[in-house]
Structures are given as structure tokens and as C-alpha cells.
Figure 1 (cartoon, rainbow, N blue to C red):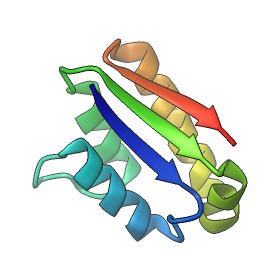
Figure 2: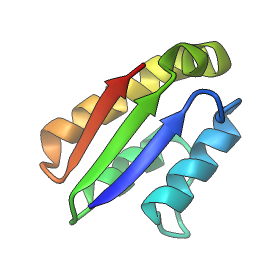
Figure 3: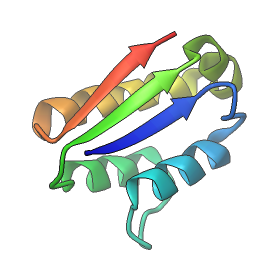
Figure 4: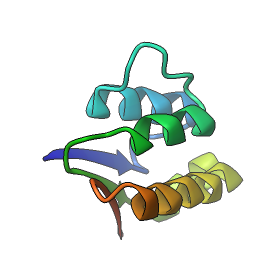
Length: 90
């Protein structure tokens, strides 16, 4: 199982968010480092994957409304691909 931890104490901007997503999940080179590309990649994942959101208050402070958009993508993907789940923990 792949686990990707998105820690608000370490993620200070969108670039860092996409760096962590790309490296933790082993996303392909064509990953466009945006939420549309993330959706495309996550819906194709074939092995069990969990994405953990840690220190969510800091994530919200650092990412603003982008976090809400990210959560919508994660929610949609988790409904469409049974291999992908996400957990919110403070």
C-alpha cells in the first residue's frame, strides 16, 4: 500500500504540495502539477493508496481555497477508484 502524507507543517505552497504528491505517489513524468492532472493520475492508480491530510489547519492557512479544491478532487477520486482513499486527521 502506498501512503502519501500531506503535512500542513511542511507544505507551504502549491509547488511543495505537488512535489510531495508526485514523489510520494510515483506519478508519471507527464503529471501536470495541477488538480486536473492529479485527478487523471489518481483515477488510474491500480494499487491501494491512502492520502493522509495532517495538520489541516496549517494546510488551509498555506493553501487557502486551493485546499478545498484538493479535497473535492480527493473525494471524487475516492468514489471513482476503490484503490484510493484519503483521511483527514489533525
